[in-house]
Length: 158
Image (tube, rainbow, N blue to C red; front, top):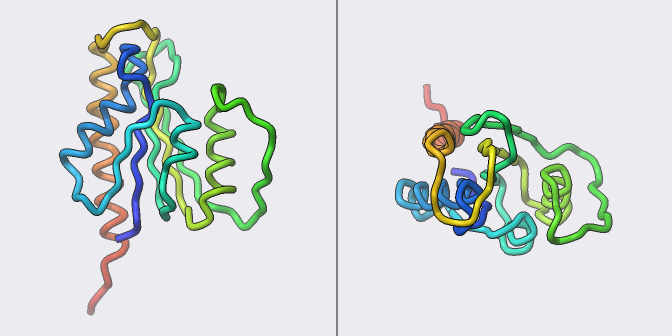
């Protein structure tokens, strides 16, 4: 099995913005302890505190007119150099985060980013029903992806 890290990004006190954190909490209950599942308050927190791994799955919310929709992006390491650039740790967009992960996490081979669409972020712990549906869909998608990755690692016998 590849070493897999799941990062749920969000603020648990900002309503729909907690979608990534909620996904992480659900997955922590469902996945074996060999898979690291972390809750991160920001992309910068994810970058600085995530362990090295070969596969990273990142879940975060994004502003969308379609709450509960999923934005899925899978990337594999290319044979190229990833440079550094100046960043504001409070404002890292997805592309910058992914490029920084490639630069700092040398053993990383694949990143799967899953964004859960939210139309508003309010203080409080209430989640919109559509966002809850997106959370359930993201959990299912991640479980399927981890099962697929595990199947790829099994030896083939004739």
